[in-house]
Length: 170
Image (tube, rainbow, N blue to C red; front, side, top):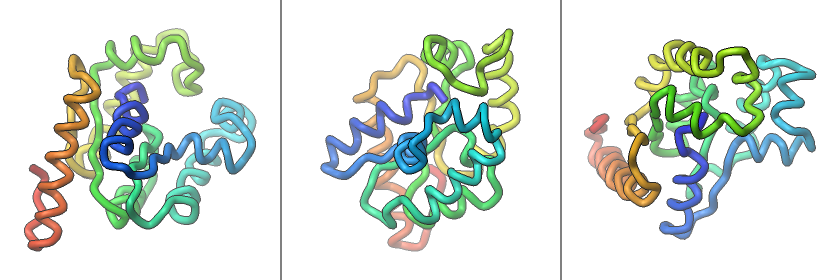
């Protein structure tokens, strides 16, 4: 959360003339409920199941730019399911940057006394899953255009590697 997935995803979709989908928004649209309400009323485990359903049933097979929630890669098998559909680029930011970007929102996991510490805990717990999912990009201090250009280079390099059978996490 707060790394710029949705912002850079929308920009990439516009630049590449592709549809943009955000799994959180898709879940809200399909359930007619806000994410914060799903967390509050049904819990995180139920929300993770909705994320799984979103990836397995609701997203297009290919051709779209997709921004996922920050915890989706922690669910067993999800990075494999997402990788089947394309290239995964994980965006990283420092806890301070994430807090600055999210402090005025209503992120369910940050409704604690010390949100910055919670961010550190989440990053530590998720880091292994994030790193094995695909290429990581640090977003601190970079413009959306710089990030989009960097992700474009990663995408083209990864697609070339897939075509030649020499996949690499460059």
